[in-house]
Length: 358
Image 1 (tube, rainbow, N blue to C red):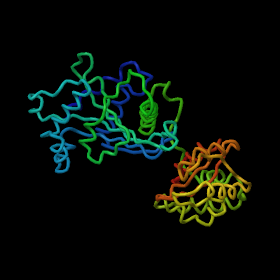
Image 2: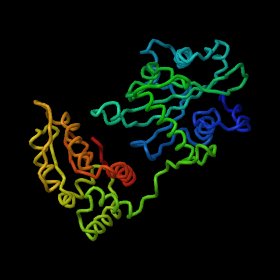
Image 3: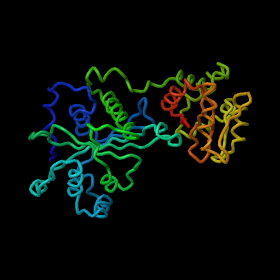
């Protein structure tokens, strides 16, 4: 039997809170994960790539040969011992021996997504965020009425047990700095978006912004092509290319570059190895802009280390250097209008054409 199965129906009668990380809202997401599907994924505005939300259960999610091997490798004998170690980190009372003999199951929710990280470092495009929600009894309650959070960044959980044990307790009360401040802002957006995906009713104060992506039409492809070309290609050519792309969706994101190579040549892209000199940048950006382009940079600066200096010079013309994701050690650069970059990224995500800010 499941420890949480009968505890959740009474809490929606309480006054709704405006914080998306309230028990009522997290519990509603849990209901979906428990009763309908133990995992789901979606794309949303303002978050790069796919959001993954999964339910894990102690001990059953770990009772397989690889899981038990990881547990033993971390110095534990069974999943309950791992759970007790996590509970101790979050100041949740440990499971008693008597409780363990009842063969109960204990669930947690794992939320994983990428945050944009260029505000932390111009050389860091994005960082992987992981949040784990563990349910608990607060303020002496005999029933589940709260949760605690464990958090980690930039971990891919290749050894799930080890990486889970190395998470940190994430309190909602203390001020956050750096990447944790970004994580805190983004996880609130993700929870709201998850509710919108699952048709979970939100307090009015949290319903003012819709994070759902628009349904893709050929008009979105046209808009994307117009933006990456900065309206330098004829309307007829854009329409024809958009119809072709929309009618023949790529099986893989990397297929877009191969299937549309001729059109991309007209866009005046710069195809470069990951190693390039300042002189290369000046030449090809001059070709893209159809005007002379020069920029200042420190001596002995090459390749990606040139990006901040290139962007600073382009920003004087309200432009920004971007690249298609080539899924390799190369770039396919293009120049976009700076005030259109956010929309470009959003459209690229919608129509599965991979582009990246630098």
